[in-house]
Length: 182
Image 1: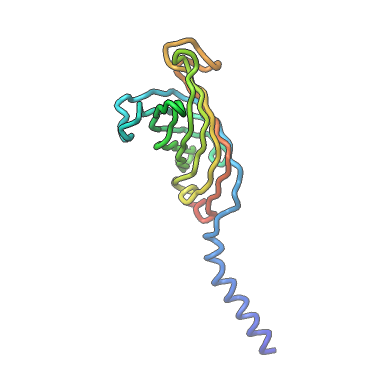
Image 2: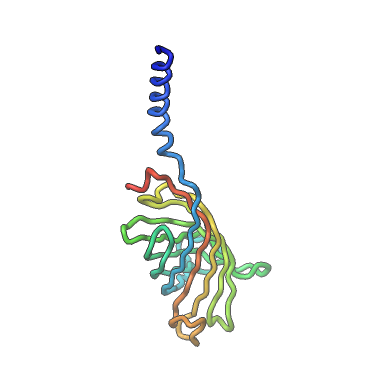
């Protein structure tokens, strides 16, 4: 009888000790997908970019993203031109803000192509989760992105309003269960 009581106490203590460790384990990776649309502009002074940057590209608007719902977004990235690679982008982030004010921040890098005589653009790239707030405080993950944009003042392209851009994101993220209540 004493052996079973000792075994029961050891089992209970093991569960009590293990429970905090389990709470900090990240969730399984889950798919994430979203589309955002908004205005875009460039700053030719390229603040915050290295000296080789042509400009700082920025965009903001709204959209829908799994695990966040309706989002507002703000994108900023440095744009470069390389004769061998064409237009590339990096050194920037996109912050997605959910209705409850939780944020997911990703860093992106990739390449862009111009349509016509700077009438529009396309882009393809990759992203990696680099931070956030609330349930995304410790988020990790990565994926791909693509986008299209209409340059303001020209012919309307891609059925977008003049000067609008649309970006699509797919990938996987993981975030800790204990962060969901933050």
